Length: 152
Image (cartoon, one colour):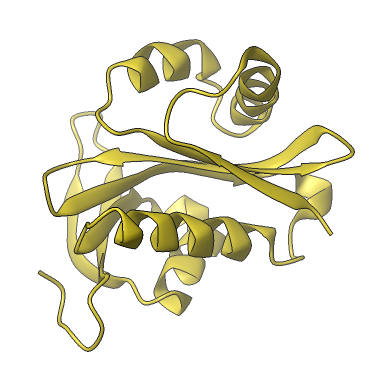
């Protein structure tokens, strides 16, 4: 069973190196991630480790006083299908709700179908689809963090 840690800041170098390595394997833009993360307000890193190795992570930041953005997340290929992404997401949502946010938003693409399905299983609603500046079709999802409330 992996250990889950969270950081309301950029993590220490060892943790961040593991996150960047995994991020680069999945998204191929790790060189930009740390620079962009340093500029994001109220950043939260949630990381799963096994034998002190990063096997998954979720990163988010504040969009407004009541809305949080779930930005990036990934799980090592050999650890997928074991509920790790769900554990990371659930802790992220719990921490964000405890911090007073009322909704969490994310964006994804059709090519990340497993992430789209995971978001829907965890209570997100699709609120918009659009083409970004690069012509890539994107999907916006939002989840209310207030019980029995519609997406705000």
